[in-house]
Image 1 (cartoon, one colour):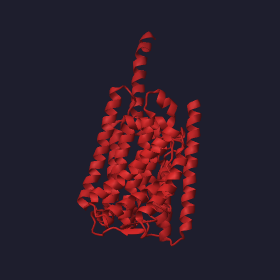
Image 2 (cartoon, rainbow, N blue to C red):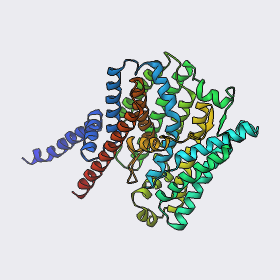
Image 3 (cartoon, helix red, strand yellow):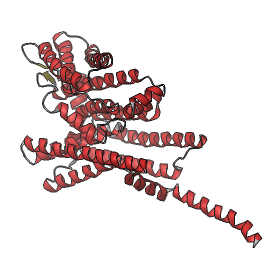
Image 4 (cartoon, one colour):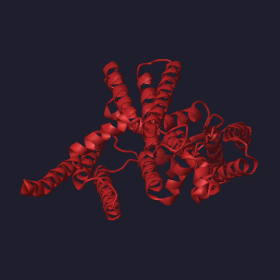
Length: 417
């Protein structure tokens, strides 16, 4: 009896270790995913499911929707608004808002056109001036916010009106300036596509980058004695990314291919994803958005984080405005107007960024803008009035906010329990 009691514990421990090893494999990853969903951490699941539903419905209604030619156009149209939405993600992470991104993008386009066409300055100088205009506006917003305590909603609403007026003033009496079609900037936005062979190289590099980043994270957490994923799970994710991106590139290459402007947008998303997820600044952004006072007591320079968020959102708005002007080959009084402002904010929220701060990723801009542009493209192919696009986009936005609110309550209840 004593001998059996002595031998049982090691055997039980061996079986427990085996179960733990199994749980850290693919089955454990799947179980962990569903556990997180039940706990309210839905991640990008709703927007991914929504995107599949939208594509399926529009494809059934019009077989042209998922054609290679239409998807190429969809990616190109997504880039300018997606870049602006990337800035909105940054400001929402710290639980603030910028309602003037449309006006700032339009002003940047006007500055670019005036300096490049009317003043005859080099393209590089005009580009730098346009982007720095956005950065300066963000810095101005941050100082007003920090020094006077005025809500960002009010500051940027005033900016929306003020910079719209400044845009009209900069453009002058003509109200519109055409960019030269032979300009490298216009060619970049309209006719520049990645060579087929290079697009596949970029796919391989993206999958390799995912694997390398994941491997470094696993090794770091292992050395610190923290829970970590497995090499098997990382390898599976990397292979899936390689296969998915490879098929997407192959399909787009059946017509014109992948536009360099869309590649720039993806590159900005990846850079911001790294900055938000792997740097002290990124962790501070989430901390300030979660609880600014707690972050301040933890030693985080809260004012600097707010400043960086305001500067980034206006800078990205300026970059998006420049890309939109290049895509249109013109800057006019309607640049940055219409639904640009609301589409950028809607894209960030639909992509999974919380309006309450502290939650979201750079990929929210990518996923959200794909949803917005898919709705726009699908309804255009069906020859429906633009009113339907606003209605559908509004409903999708409401659903996204409702899902975020429900998941917050679910996480709070699990945390309390």
